[in-house]
Amino acid sequence: MEVSIVWEYKAQGTKKRTTFTSQMMTAQEALRLAKDIEKTGRVETLTFHDEDGERWTKKELEKLVKEIETEPHNIVVYFDGGYNKEYRVAGLGAVLYFEQNGKPYRIRKNEAVESIESNNDAEYAAFWLALRELETLGAHHLPVVFRGDSQVVLSQLSGEWPVFEERENRWLDRIEAKLAELGLKPRYEPVGRAENKEADTLAGQALRGEFIFSRKQL
Image (cartoon, rainbow, N blue to C red):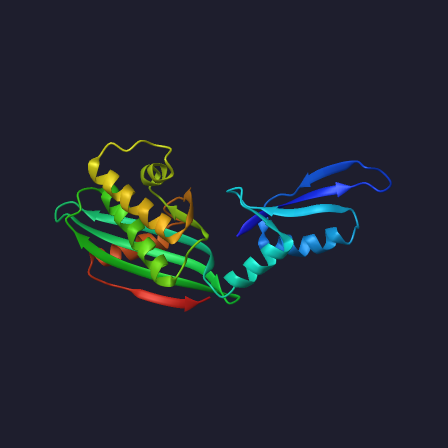
């Protein structure tokens, strides 16, 4: 979780006030910096703001950080879908990186699905697989970074590109409903195939009938 600090500064001996806003940083970093700011004795107000405009006091943010420490957080998801056009079968791969109880973890999962009509459908199905794993993990009401190498699908998910195919609209409806149900705040980041190699490998293994699930502390 990342926030910025908004510091309303009070000058000594005057009634003048000036507001400073920091760059985005983790909530933990922001709380550490806030303690140093308070030592100046020049704090009129100190608040914390995330990218969606939500706002917390220092006490509220400390409570939130303590609550989420035992839950999965700082989540980054990689997904990829491979497609066999001849058999209309897709191989799906998803890799989840997250922290919990102060430790980093990785989940790797793949599966194969039939009756898939296109490469884009395979990518949407892989995204759906990742969402189901997030739900099983217990992730909720947190920002999540989703990374994939399909510019089309990521741009459609973010709303930057229009969707004309009815099948793809159905995928979008399902995905948006699940994101809302879990309270997840997605951020979509296109990456190259090299950076998405783990998910791509999992998708290829699924097409070959090699099914994998693992959870590992890093």
